[in-house]
Structures are given as structure tokens and as C-alpha cells.
Image (cartoon, rainbow, N blue to C red):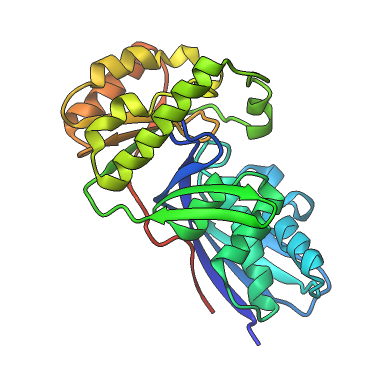
Length: 302
């Protein structure tokens, strides 16, 4: 019987380019949990002090909620445990923190009920909670993922990124709630915009799979969600013009924002200096994360 499990789950950048709700990459930034069974008939949690207080209550904890939903779905007994989080993907930053919590809760449910950790089944259970497969697919499988859902479950293609590809994450100080951000989206789009997004999406996917990153600057443009979610105060179009060069491949709003992911051949001093100079001129503070693709997805030990 498993009495304890430790988990490491990667962040992700979803809605990649024109791949709304279906395309994502996993990143080497992690949420780390340990769940320890207890004899008490209650849950307890411990999070780093920097985590928002609304996450530190048992009632509002997404890991515990996902764990209990999964147990109820499969008619498994709910066992109580202490949840300890040592690291967490930045909350409400567009980097898949919710996906790491959902996947964590589901994996804990499987482990404590002695179920095989089948990643495809975990993806189907996570979809029932998240309702779109992009972040959760990347968190579970790692690499570059394309996924969609139909009646029989989630369909997924994962491609490990083996050719040199670096990621710079621009993370403004503000937070973005996904549900609130979705309210900004149009209910309908024109046929022209739909065709343009589809053309770019398939070209972007083919370019990443083939390692032809020079195509990304144009193929990562999005017309469905980015224009309505991106913060105009950041003046990103002006920044993009400053970044153009052989090291810069392309960029995308990460998830629902506010973070932006930049794909590049290397995280050069020139790129970083340009980014910081741009935001200093706007009197805005940002964090700049230098990351690479995580090709493994979640890992665990018992």
C-alpha cells in the first residue's frame, strides 16, 4: 500500500500561437507536492508563505478538489492526507498553475487507490475537470502537445523538442484569472479570421515538429484570443519590432496571460536587454524567466 507520494509537475504555455485550447509546451518550471496519508479524518495542507492565502484553505484547494472528484468519479474511497507544497508555478500567470494542481490531485487519487498511473486515463480525468486539454496534456506528457476531446476521450500527439529551442517568459506583476479572461473573447469570428488562424496553426505545428523554427514569426500570429486578452499597456507590438533578428523565432500570449512566451535560438543578452529596456521605458516591472522545454511531463516517487 502506498502511504506517501511526491510529485513534480511542469508548468506549461498553452494556447500557443493560434493553437487556442489545443496546443501547448511544457516548461522546466515546476510545482512540487508531497501527499502523506494520515489517520485523521481530515485533510491538512502546507504551502510556501508566498502563495496567495485563498489557496491555503482546504475548502478552496484545487489539488484536494481534483483528488476528491476523481475518487468519486471512479467510486474509490476518499483517504485523508497531509498535502505539502514545496514549490509552485506562479499563480494566475498564464503558466498552467491550475493544470499542475489538477494533475497532482488526480495522480494522488490513482496512487492511494493502487491504480496504474496511465497517462492517457489521467488526461481524460483531467479534461473532465479542466474542460480543455492544452495545459493538462503538456503537464502530463511534457514536450510539445496537440490535443482535442471527443466523446471517446482525449486525442493527443506529443512531440519531444530535441532541437535547440529556448524560451523567455515575460511575466508582468499583474495576475489574470482564466474565467474572467474568457469573458473578453468574441462569441463569433469571421470566416476569414477562422481560415487565417487555421492556416497558421497547421503551419506552426509542422514547423515545430520539423524544427523549422524560422517559420514561427509569422505562423504564431493569432486572431482568436490574443488581441482581446493582451494588455495594451505593455505595448507588445512595439517590443516585437525591437526583438526581430536571427535569434528571435516568435512569440505568443501564454495561456490567457498576462505572461508572454518568446521562442528563440538562445536567450541572448541582446534579447534580455531589449525586453528590460522596453518595460523600463513604460515604468512597468516584470519578471523574466529563462526556460527550456520539459520533455518528460509529471514525475513521481513513492
